[in-house]
Image (cartoon, rainbow, N blue to C red; front, side, top):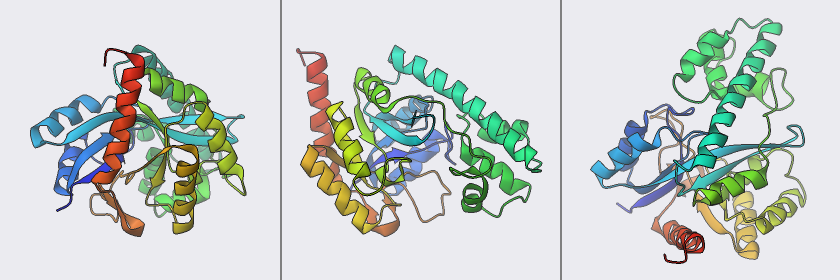
Length: 295
């Protein structure tokens, strides 16, 4: 079996289906030998994941997926921090603020649903999230439980997506701020699933935005993602070549375990071999050397 990589995975520390250790175990069974745990605005699952990875001989790079919101929520995207120090004080403080913002957003979403006659409660959403950071998937699961929607897709399409009745814009960390936080924690800043970024795509839109952010220090693009179509993949590869950005990817696995997406693999033939690892290692070494000339 070819050793696989996956630089985009979620556990119950945010909105994934598996505890961090169980996620590592599944990744190992799927042939993943290098992975990054990238929970939404949270690094609390990293100690458990790192310990289990060490037991199984899996290389784990600590990570995070930061939520970005600009222009009063008209521009929304995610930035992966790969190879970070999860204990870096400025990052820890920023994540604590992000968690509080997510709670406020979740409460407002529930309020809007209740105003629309949907009998969902904040208490149940928080219970579903458990110790994890509250996100829209937790609200979606609550909607499914009470029979308001059939599945996650309907929950987002009918209620939770941008311009839907219960959508609430994120409170804003700017992308440049997210990049600076990730670099300050020693990691690489990668724009996650770029075509899904809100408010930047369209003819020339994404290219212009990526060019601008690349000048601010963006390290790479998540080229390979289960949601990307072939034309999008070619477009992102071209951007990486033109702007000297690292080409990376991941399954963006949340669960379920028996679904079409699994660690290291996904729809559209997604299968991340070892060739993706070395460019990232080189960038991480270069960043480490820049931070400490003795390295």
